[in-house]
Length: 165
Image 1 (cartoon, rainbow, N blue to C red):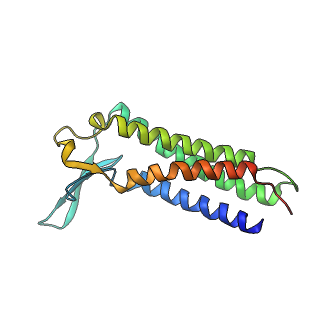
Image 2: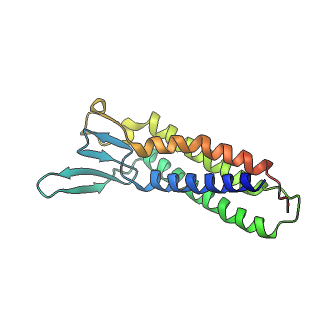
Image 3: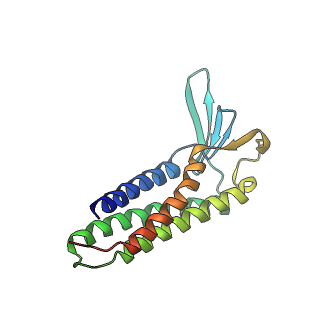
């Protein structure tokens, strides 16, 4: 039972870190490695100075929906972890971690919704000056999709996990 508890805690921390990286990093869409777009900025690499030049993304309804859903997923997962720690030390023997599990499931569903919206509406979200066929999804977008099954599985594990001691 102790190994399951350590596994679930480690899985939770890993998915929380992945969610934070997927939300804050600048690689949801990449053009030729010299230009990319994320949820907050459109960036271009300047060879002469060796720095990234970034400008705010055009605010569309779809982009705002993705931004809100990704931030909500980080909030749900953070709350879930804090509640889990609280329940671990205060809950009576035999208690179930329902609230923690539900928060994780909600985090998984919000990430799923955000990634799905970005997938289906990338033409409206991305800058119109660039050709979409010359670009591809970046690693942050992939991290968001990887988080979906991990969050849902950890939520289900939390719901079935019982406090033994």
